[in-house]
Length: 534
Image (cartoon, rainbow, N blue to C red; front, side, top):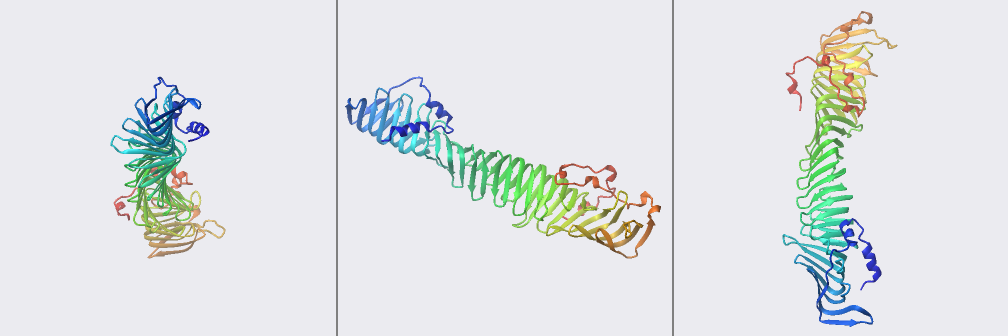
């Protein structure tokens, strides 16, 4: 039999997140009913030891209202409506609740049962299934219909096994609350938590504290939310996180369907593929694990950091599709703006493939690198290692090098390729209808005049951003006009537009929408637009 000191301690322990049980501990019952001795094979009194105590043995049974208690032997205090029961103790309430243990103290005045050692509480559910609570120390408040433990316990139903250091279970509501070292074991996952509420009826776990859910597919980190253990669906709040393989999804709230591998995030989303070194951000997005497809929109941003310097991209919508285990394709739609230390651009839509590290810009693209501006029908940027290898401007190609406020070196043609060395342009080749305007410089940097040429093909080699060599063929035509004789209309080729006001200046400037001025919209046919490579 346990000491009085231990029972005082046990009475003080249930302070842990059991508000209903705590309220009931100090309550005064509205009415008192008597505990009745129903049967005992032997009954003894010892007035000298305790005048109020009856010593009972052999098939002992008691009744208090609709509750029955059975044991091998007992001390019965009739005047105080209390008892101590020993050996094969069983307590029954109706035909749905059964409690077993080695020792019971029952106070009929406050309807509180204290069951100790090898305790088992069985609650029959509406579907005839059984919920079983295992512990060594259980207090059961009959009035509140709540059982609570405080030295470790486990609750088992047909779906899950839950354990914690502190816990309570209400047979009437079928709600269990767990605190401290909580573990929910399911055949498909394991949930570890600080605080958890669980319905044995719906099999829904309500997460109330820092938690992690571990399965073969990955891990979920959350501190608030709900998990349906039957349907394997979750609603996660408070910046929860899902980790699946190389992918990580974070959001203010997340709806997750584990069976189909679908995670939907709302508010400040963060989706990262650590293998492909791609990050999606936005206010809404989702990830399809089985198809390896990601989507982000609403203030969306994509960060591509596989090439050393991070490429920051903004658009209305981003998609990421998986081709195979090593290849991802990222697509951006509507109002694309991007920034990298050595490269900036704007366009309507864009595509990037990790297979060949090629960035495609569609619909009125403009690209900047250092002092150079490139635009045309379609632009393809080819990456090599951590830098730009070359840029291919397809149809209606135009290259501009800024010299000063009124003078620009210009190249124009059907097709243009600009080759880079490090972050500097080293060669430009024009294929078809080549036109150029250049300002040759004296050794002191002064301008000689303006050189204008025309031919079918043209290749220019540059050194330190100055023309080193020039090759024009066949049958080139050219004129050199001294600076004093130049008129403003002579300084630019047809379709010249300086879009510097649209250029993203930093990684945050990609969010600043800049509309193209009406006078800067090219006036040409769109009949070739649908021929851009996919």
